[in-house]
Amino acid sequence: MTLLALEDCDVFYGKAQALHRVSLEIGPGEVVSLIGRNGAGKSTILKTMIGLNRATGGRRLWKGGDVTALRPDQLGRLGIAYVPEDRRIFSNLSVDENLRIATVMGRKGGWDAARVHKLFPVLRERATQPGDTLSGGEQQMLAIARGLLTNPEVLLLDEPTEGLAPLIVDQLVEAMRLINAEGMALLLVEQNLRVPMKLAHRQYVIDHGAIRWTGTTAELQASRDEIEKLISL
Image (cartoon, rainbow, N blue to C red; front, side):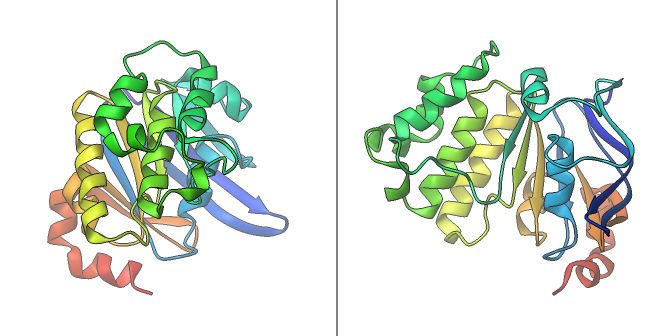
């Protein structure tokens, strides 16, 4: 069964076409990566999946049903969580307040404050600090934890490791591995192959708003030179 999918989607920003008949799907419990150079259309795909961008052609599907017309809040209540590239931390709220906001979604599930603190212990240590006083890596942990507290079935992650120190990247990779091990599907957007090769079951490569290649991680490894040319800056 497919959990979340785009089917032949076109997206425009004004008169400029950003996505060209994009089809992409995520199954339950899968880790799928979307790889491409800066400006290739990766973030546009995630925003289309969560309803922030309107598809002028094609459909958005959730468990086989057409949800193209639903708003982002309605998609969130179905079980889709989105962690944007800029994290969108509420800078005037404490870490704990940032987390509590996510529980307003009201979905039932196993993720609560205790579990996200176990996954990211630094968030307990920083509980009373304003969100904008955290380091970049800590803010990324907070953004992911906030997504988890909506108890989604699929987590959309836009460049979660960009600009972070290698040690923090390793911590985030391990956290994503643990999240997936509990059955949550992940769609991971990255510019390079390093993190997707460690985590993803299947890979999509996008360039100039169109999917140029898709396959398993093993198939990507076999075609690595070709893929590197597609995603090189």
